Image (cartoon, rainbow, N blue to C red; front, side, top):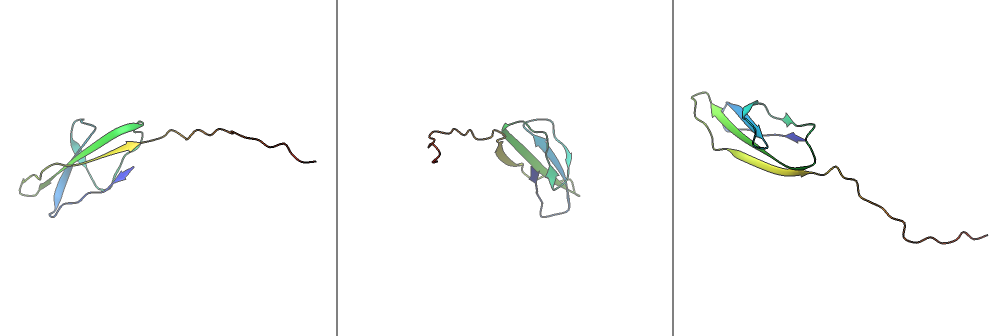
Length: 79
């Protein structure tokens, strides 16, 4: 999963994944090895003057389960 974000000013970004500790991050942020299920990222920008934005968040679901298939009817071959 790749997530892109930006701010209206030159800023440093801090990201938190699934409620974990925030750490410095850059856009686009490539997330790999995330488990199946619900996930959320929170991003905050801080400009050169030290002003911090409100936190922006995005939630999504990872679905790695393949669909099941079942053969429900067969017809005998002719001949």
